[in-house]
Amino acid sequence: MERHPRLRVLADHGGGMVPHFSARLSMGPGYRQTRDTLPRPALDYFRRFYADTALFGAPHAVRCVLDFFGPDHVLFGTDTPLGPPEAIDATIADLDAAGLPEADRAAVYAGNARRLLGVT
Image (cartoon, rainbow, N blue to C red; front, side, top):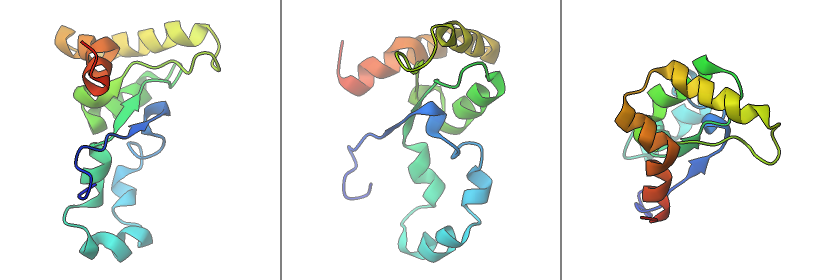
């Protein structure tokens, strides 16, 4: 990412295990082998990623994703057409349960995607 600072990475399903295992990732053998070669801590690079909300009825997981990446790096996603139709309502309920301020809600639902894709 140092060589390509404008690179944007969108990780599906809330960024996978990264937000949930962030502390463990900084302790693992792979981290110990690479930490001295990186200009920044490895988790700083992961936090530059974007993630979606395709987590289906797991409000605690959505909260973890929002806390790790920040609401400015989270995009509304439902896994459609692969996920069941009720996943959309479940994802909306998860975001409602997060209690985001209106500006952050607007960013997650549309603003971040527009900014990321350069759509006005």
